[in-house]
Amino acid sequence: MAAIGRFQKGDDIFYAKVVDGEIFRLQGDVFGSPSFEKKATPLKGVKTLVPIVPSKIIAVGLNYADHARETGKTLPKEPLFWLKATTSLIPDGAKIEIPFANHRNDFEAELGIVIGRRVRNVTPAAAARYIFGYTAAQDITDRTIQNGESQWARAKSFDTFTPLGPYVETKIDPHDLSIQLFQNGQLRQNGNTSQLIFNCFHLVSFISVNMTLLPGDVILTGTPSGVGPIDSADRLEVRIQGMAPLVNTVK
Ligand code: MG
Image (cartoon, rainbow, N blue to C red; front, side):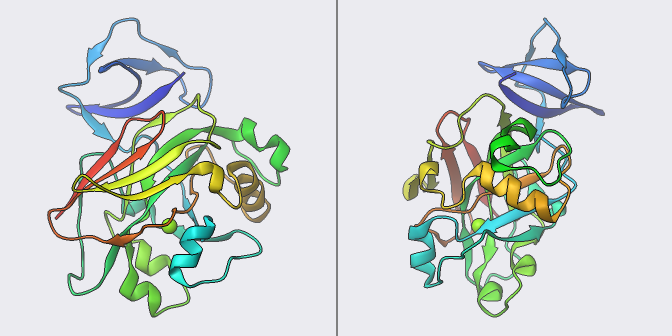
Protein backbone atom coordinates (compact mmCIF):
# COMPACT_ATOMS: atom_id res chain seq x y z
CA MET A 1 0.00 0.00 0.00
CA ALA A 2 1.03 3.60 -0.15
CA ALA A 3 -1.38 6.58 0.07
CA ILE A 4 -4.79 5.35 1.24
CA GLY A 5 -7.81 7.65 1.13
CA ARG A 6 -11.52 7.44 1.84
CA PHE A 7 -13.88 8.75 -0.77
CA GLN A 8 -17.54 9.30 -1.59
CA LYS A 9 -19.33 9.10 -4.91
CA GLY A 10 -23.08 9.53 -4.58
CA ASP A 11 -24.12 7.36 -1.62
CA ASP A 12 -21.10 5.10 -2.06
CA ILE A 13 -18.29 5.49 0.50
CA PHE A 14 -15.09 3.53 -0.13
CA TYR A 15 -11.35 3.33 0.55
CA ALA A 16 -8.87 3.55 -2.31
CA LYS A 17 -5.18 3.78 -3.08
CA VAL A 18 -4.13 7.12 -4.60
CA VAL A 19 -1.56 7.12 -7.40
CA ASP A 20 -0.79 10.20 -9.53
CA GLY A 21 -4.26 11.76 -9.43
CA GLU A 22 -6.07 8.46 -9.92
CA ILE A 23 -7.62 6.16 -7.35
CA PHE A 24 -7.86 2.38 -7.21
CA ARG A 25 -10.70 1.04 -5.10
CA LEU A 26 -9.80 -1.17 -2.19
CA GLN A 27 -11.44 -4.56 -1.78
CA GLY A 28 -11.53 -6.26 1.61
CA ASP A 29 -10.64 -4.88 5.03
CA VAL A 30 -8.48 -1.75 4.87
CA PHE A 31 -6.67 -2.91 8.05
CA GLY A 32 -6.35 -6.51 6.82
CA SER A 33 -4.68 -7.61 3.58
CA PRO A 34 -6.76 -5.76 1.00
CA SER A 35 -6.46 -5.94 -2.77
CA PHE A 36 -7.11 -3.12 -5.22
CA GLU A 37 -9.17 -2.87 -8.38
CA LYS A 38 -7.05 -2.72 -11.51
CA LYS A 39 -9.27 -0.11 -13.13
CA ALA A 40 -8.52 3.48 -12.10
CA THR A 41 -11.14 6.07 -11.19
CA PRO A 42 -10.24 9.74 -11.72
CA LEU A 43 -9.80 11.59 -8.43
CA LYS A 44 -11.84 14.39 -9.97
CA GLY A 45 -15.51 13.65 -9.46
CA VAL A 46 -15.19 11.92 -6.08
CA LYS A 47 -15.37 13.67 -2.71
CA THR A 48 -12.37 13.23 -0.41
CA LEU A 49 -13.42 12.29 3.14
CA VAL A 50 -11.39 12.11 6.36
CA PRO A 51 -9.21 9.08 5.48
CA ILE A 52 -10.08 6.94 8.52
CA VAL A 53 -12.85 6.66 11.13
CA PRO A 54 -11.24 6.67 14.59
CA SER A 55 -12.89 5.61 17.86
CA LYS A 56 -10.76 8.28 19.52
CA ILE A 57 -8.23 11.01 18.83
CA ILE A 58 -5.38 11.32 21.31
CA ALA A 59 -3.47 14.59 21.13
CA VAL A 60 0.01 15.00 22.57
CA GLY A 61 1.20 18.40 23.79
CA LEU A 62 4.58 20.07 24.20
CA ASN A 63 6.40 17.38 22.23
CA TYR A 64 8.83 19.75 20.46
CA ALA A 65 11.20 21.64 22.79
CA ASP A 66 11.11 24.87 20.76
CA HIS A 67 7.29 24.96 20.90
CA ALA A 68 7.25 24.29 24.66
CA ARG A 69 9.66 27.21 25.00
CA GLU A 70 7.43 29.59 22.99
CA THR A 71 4.43 28.75 25.20
CA GLY A 72 6.43 29.41 28.37
CA LYS A 73 5.52 25.94 29.66
CA THR A 74 8.01 23.47 31.12
CA LEU A 75 8.76 20.25 29.24
CA PRO A 76 6.74 17.29 30.49
CA LYS A 77 8.75 14.36 31.91
CA GLU A 78 6.29 11.92 30.34
CA PRO A 79 4.07 12.44 27.27
CA LEU A 80 1.25 14.86 28.05
CA PHE A 81 -1.95 13.87 26.27
CA TRP A 82 -5.70 14.48 26.17
CA LEU A 83 -8.65 13.34 24.06
CA LYS A 84 -10.10 15.36 21.18
CA ALA A 85 -13.67 14.74 20.03
CA THR A 86 -13.88 12.70 16.80
CA THR A 87 -16.62 15.12 15.68
CA SER A 88 -13.91 17.79 15.36
CA LEU A 89 -12.50 16.03 12.28
CA ILE A 90 -12.76 17.58 8.82
CA PRO A 91 -11.19 16.41 5.53
CA ASP A 92 -8.80 18.19 3.22
CA GLY A 93 -10.56 21.13 1.56
CA ALA A 94 -13.23 21.61 4.26
CA LYS A 95 -13.64 24.88 6.13
CA ILE A 96 -12.48 25.53 9.70
CA GLU A 97 -15.21 27.39 11.58
CA ILE A 98 -14.21 29.69 14.42
CA PRO A 99 -16.86 29.71 17.16
CA PHE A 100 -15.62 32.78 19.07
CA ALA A 101 -14.19 35.44 16.79
CA ASN A 102 -13.12 37.59 19.77
CA HIS A 103 -10.87 34.76 21.05
CA ARG A 104 -7.39 33.95 19.81
CA ASN A 105 -7.55 30.77 17.70
CA ASP A 106 -4.29 29.15 16.56
CA PHE A 107 -3.14 26.80 13.83
CA GLU A 108 -0.95 23.83 14.88
CA ALA A 109 0.53 21.58 12.18
CA GLU A 110 1.04 18.02 13.42
CA LEU A 111 2.04 14.56 12.24
CA GLY A 112 -0.76 12.07 12.92
CA ILE A 113 -0.21 8.38 13.66
CA VAL A 114 -2.99 6.01 12.50
CA ILE A 115 -3.31 2.71 14.40
CA GLY A 116 -3.79 -0.42 12.27
CA ARG A 117 -4.26 -3.23 14.81
CA ARG A 118 -5.85 -3.42 18.24
CA VAL A 119 -3.06 -2.93 20.76
CA ARG A 120 -2.60 -2.75 24.51
CA ASN A 121 0.56 -2.57 26.59
CA VAL A 122 3.06 -2.70 23.74
CA THR A 123 6.77 -1.86 24.05
CA PRO A 124 8.29 0.93 21.90
CA ALA A 125 10.34 -1.72 20.06
CA ALA A 126 7.18 -3.60 19.03
CA ALA A 127 4.93 -0.56 18.42
CA ALA A 128 5.65 -0.16 14.69
CA ARG A 129 3.76 -3.29 13.73
CA TYR A 130 0.53 -1.86 15.18
CA ILE A 131 0.76 1.35 13.14
CA PHE A 132 -1.19 1.56 9.87
CA GLY A 133 0.44 4.76 8.66
CA TYR A 134 0.87 8.49 9.07
CA THR A 135 -1.04 11.57 7.98
CA ALA A 136 -0.99 15.36 8.14
CA ALA A 137 -3.23 17.09 10.65
CA GLN A 138 -3.95 20.26 12.54
CA ASP A 139 -4.78 20.64 16.21
CA ILE A 140 -6.73 23.93 15.97
CA THR A 141 -6.92 25.54 19.39
CA ASP A 142 -9.02 28.24 21.01
CA ARG A 143 -6.04 29.66 22.90
CA THR A 144 -8.20 32.02 24.96
CA ILE A 145 -10.14 29.09 26.41
CA GLN A 146 -7.02 26.92 26.73
CA ASN A 147 -5.14 29.57 28.72
CA GLY A 148 -8.01 29.87 31.17
CA GLU A 149 -8.32 26.14 31.94
CA SER A 150 -6.14 23.24 33.06
CA GLN A 151 -8.04 20.71 30.87
CA TRP A 152 -7.62 21.22 27.12
CA ALA A 153 -10.38 19.09 25.59
CA ARG A 154 -12.83 21.99 25.38
CA ALA A 155 -10.37 24.38 23.70
CA LYS A 156 -9.45 21.80 21.08
CA SER A 157 -12.66 19.84 20.40
CA PHE A 158 -14.89 22.33 18.62
CA ASP A 159 -16.41 20.98 15.41
CA THR A 160 -13.95 21.47 12.48
CA PHE A 161 -10.91 21.85 14.84
CA THR A 162 -9.11 18.72 13.53
CA PRO A 163 -8.37 18.93 9.81
CA LEU A 164 -6.79 15.57 8.83
CA GLY A 165 -5.54 13.98 5.63
CA PRO A 166 -5.91 14.02 2.72
CA TYR A 167 -4.55 10.44 2.87
CA VAL A 168 -2.73 7.99 5.13
CA GLU A 169 0.80 7.16 4.02
CA THR A 170 1.48 3.54 4.91
CA LYS A 171 5.08 3.39 3.68
CA ILE A 172 7.00 6.21 5.28
CA ASP A 173 9.67 6.58 7.98
CA PRO A 174 7.98 8.96 10.45
CA HIS A 175 11.10 10.15 12.23
CA ASP A 176 12.86 12.40 9.71
CA LEU A 177 10.15 14.36 7.91
CA SER A 178 10.02 18.12 7.44
CA ILE A 179 6.75 19.54 8.76
CA GLN A 180 5.64 23.00 7.70
CA LEU A 181 2.62 25.24 7.95
CA PHE A 182 1.90 27.95 5.39
CA GLN A 183 -0.64 30.67 6.20
CA ASN A 184 -1.78 32.40 3.01
CA GLY A 185 1.45 31.23 1.37
CA GLN A 186 3.71 32.49 4.21
CA LEU A 187 5.85 29.93 6.01
CA ARG A 188 4.88 30.02 9.73
CA GLN A 189 6.01 26.67 11.14
CA ASN A 190 9.09 24.84 9.93
CA GLY A 191 10.14 21.79 11.91
CA ASN A 192 11.23 18.22 11.47
CA THR A 193 9.80 15.12 13.13
CA SER A 194 13.36 14.19 14.15
CA GLN A 195 12.87 16.90 16.84
CA LEU A 196 10.02 15.02 18.54
CA ILE A 197 10.83 14.61 22.25
CA PHE A 198 8.80 11.37 22.48
CA ASN A 199 8.86 9.65 19.09
CA CYS A 200 5.94 7.84 17.43
CA PHE A 201 6.83 4.39 18.79
CA HIS A 202 7.32 5.74 22.31
CA LEU A 203 3.91 7.49 22.13
CA VAL A 204 2.04 4.39 20.92
CA SER A 205 3.70 2.39 23.70
CA PHE A 206 3.01 4.95 26.43
CA ILE A 207 -0.63 5.48 25.45
CA SER A 208 -1.27 1.73 25.00
CA VAL A 209 -0.35 1.16 28.64
CA ASN A 210 -3.18 3.54 29.52
CA MET A 211 -5.88 2.55 27.00
CA THR A 212 -6.51 -0.01 24.27
CA LEU A 213 -5.88 1.48 20.84
CA LEU A 214 -8.17 0.35 18.02
CA PRO A 215 -7.70 0.29 14.23
CA GLY A 216 -8.23 3.80 12.89
CA ASP A 217 -7.43 5.56 16.17
CA VAL A 218 -5.35 8.70 15.68
CA ILE A 219 -2.50 10.08 17.77
CA LEU A 220 -1.55 13.70 17.06
CA THR A 221 2.13 13.97 17.94
CA GLY A 222 2.40 17.67 18.85
CA THR A 223 3.31 20.82 16.97
CA PRO A 224 6.67 22.51 16.29
CA SER A 225 7.28 26.19 17.10
CA GLY A 226 5.74 29.06 15.16
CA VAL A 227 2.09 28.65 16.13
CA GLY A 228 0.05 31.77 15.53
CA PRO A 229 -3.47 33.20 15.29
CA ILE A 230 -5.75 32.47 12.37
CA ASP A 231 -8.05 34.93 10.70
CA SER A 232 -11.23 34.67 8.73
CA ALA A 233 -10.64 33.61 5.07
CA ASP A 234 -7.10 32.35 5.83
CA ARG A 235 -5.74 29.53 3.70
CA LEU A 236 -3.82 27.07 5.90
CA GLU A 237 -1.62 24.43 4.33
CA VAL A 238 0.23 21.67 6.20
CA ARG A 239 3.09 20.18 4.23
CA ILE A 240 4.75 17.04 5.54
CA GLN A 241 7.55 15.56 3.48
CA GLY A 242 6.40 12.62 1.37
CA MET A 243 2.70 13.40 1.78
CA ALA A 244 0.07 15.29 -0.18
CA PRO A 245 -0.57 18.75 1.36
CA LEU A 246 -3.51 19.28 3.72
CA VAL A 247 -5.28 22.53 2.77
CA ASN A 248 -8.15 24.13 4.65
CA THR A 249 -9.63 27.61 4.66
CA VAL A 250 -11.15 29.49 7.58
CA LYS A 251 -14.79 30.54 7.60
MG1 MG B 1 -1.28 20.39 19.45
